[in-house]
Amino acid sequence: MNPVNNNYTLTNTKTTFKIAAKELTEEDLEGLKITFVDQTFEYNANEKTITVEGLPEGFTVTYDDNSRVYAGSQTVKAKVSGNTNYDGVITKEATLTITPAKVTVTAVDKTSVYGRELVELTSQVDGSIFGTDSLNINLSKEEGLDVGTYTITVSANNANYEITTVKGTYTITKATYDMSNISFNDNSFTYDKTSK
Figure 1: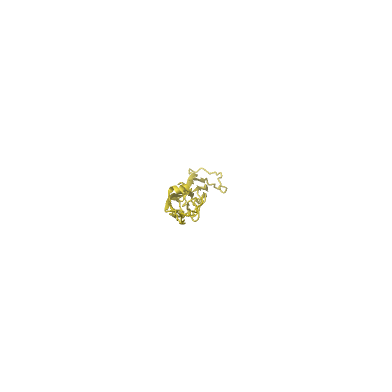
Figure 2 (figure 1 turned 90 degrees about the horizontal axis):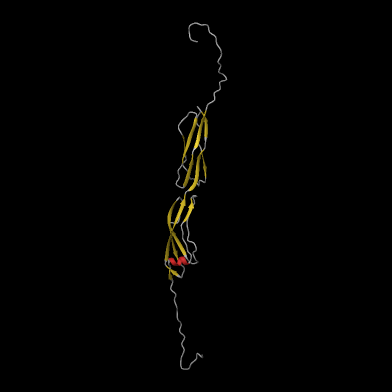
């Protein structure tokens, strides 16, 4: 078809189309596979954080209360903003948890001889102790100084550690006496009505 017709005058007119930004929704985040999930770490004296995963190019996120060092848990808020195609902010929540580190404190078995000074009680720790942390270990021997065996008990405390304690045994052995210089010889007496 010939576009030219002497009966008409053709005028070109430009039209502008504006595409409005879409309001960001939870469904958008799911569709874009953006996730923010609970995370758990074991205590090691270092700062822990959790992050939004799958963030597309141009999207941004800011966090509230997203830092923890010590054992426990807290709610972290992530505020996700879209790129130029989206308006608004979606707030997501997840839980940041730090569990206590596991250690075992064992009382070391001890032995001493009856009548002598008791030896110092000591313990052995299996597991990692971080930084300048202390387990506040206390050792105590069951009362008694006679020959026999006694229980060594252990107590320890630190909220950042799950502490297992293992008792020990304190043994007091019989004393040995040197009787080489003791003599017991025969004697004879003449009867004189007195005890000998």
